[in-house]
Image (cartoon, one colour):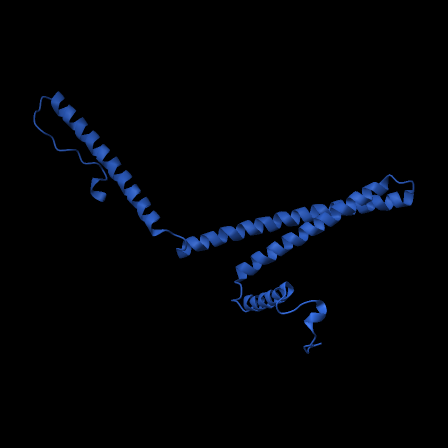
Length: 187
């Protein structure tokens, strides 16, 4: 029926000032909110795929539970006195076990797809620069520069000290310029 029916809520024990009435109003508000959610932006293909994989996981879990119960029921019938029923129960147990194995493989494949999706999203976020903290990047860059500067300074000091010791051993006095490192001009 597409038309709205009029009825008296007082017949149900509800009045506009009763607690149940506020429940009805809350229900209407929830329905309106549901309509707003439906009119939201459409999901991206990756989000739809992720939702589909989640739905499949839920369905596979339900199927797994069903076949597990079926196998348990069949196993109880195997020890019965009726040979024909026991034979059918063994066949049911084997079929349930095969179905469970197939479900497990399917769940493993779904899991690998979900992991790949997560990796792809992470790669896309890194490529687009989303989620990067400029302050953290700047701090990391400054740390790298400081580390390189210290390494070069230590190399130059060591070269200078080696040059000074060599000059003193040869009997040459005076200050010696620090020796240039191979990459001293590169940076």
